Each structure stands twice: as structure tokens, then as C-alpha cells.
Length: 169
Image (cartoon, rainbow, N blue to C red):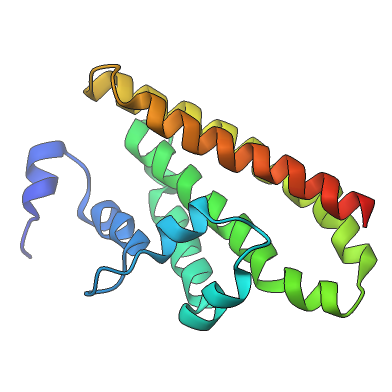
């Protein structure tokens, strides 16, 4: 069996490297994982749902989390990647249903999102940012991190705003 160059250079097992690749599964330059990570939970959910199969993205993410589970505590890269995929699973699960549930007037479901899912999601983003920052500071100079800090802050702030918006509805 062939050994990946990345496995030789980093010591990261082949199956983990392949699982990381599921964030960008297309031969085209499509980035559904990145789009989902940073997208607004309310806008434009319809466009995202038309172009990407959310169930496939969630299934790939769940498989990646399982693959990385044995390495999560010993490899900081796997901790970060696991948190990334867990965040996609949680956010994708909410986004794939939110429009339909809103149009159906399912206020109980929306209330659960505001009281449970969104706070869990904010917690995942906070943990993801901490794991990402640890890797950044290990591998890079401090400069440049501020851009990522702003992105994480914007997503978390918007989630808090969406939580308030849904609660008021």
C-alpha cells in the first residue's frame, strides 16, 4: 500500500489526512465546508441548499470525526479538525431545517434552536477558535491571526443575534 507523503512528513495517519480532505470534497474549487462554517444561519440558506447536499456534507463530517477520534487527544491537528467537523454537523443540521420549520410555524423547534442548538454552536465556535489559535501560534507568527479572530467573532456574534431574533419570534 502506498504511503502518503504527508504521512511520512508529519506522522499523521493516512486515514486522517483523507478525512481532512472531506472538507473540500470536490475536484472543482467548491468549498461547502468553508461556506457552511462562515455563512449566516438565516441568509442565504435557500441558495446553499440548492447547490449542496447538506445530508452528504453532514455524513462526510460525521465519518471524519469518527476517523479522528483515536487521535484527538494526542494530535492538536485532529482536535482542531474534529471541532471543525463537529461545528459543521451542528450548524448544517440547523440550517437544513430552519427555513422549512419557520414556514411551518414550528415554534417549539425554533425555541429549541434558540435555547439549545445555538448556545451549543457558540460553544463549538469558541472551542474551535481556541484550538485554531493554538495551532496558529505554534506554526506562525502572530501577525495574520487577527483576520481569523474577526471571522470567528463575527460568526459567534451573529449566532447570538439569531438566537435573540428567534427567541423574540
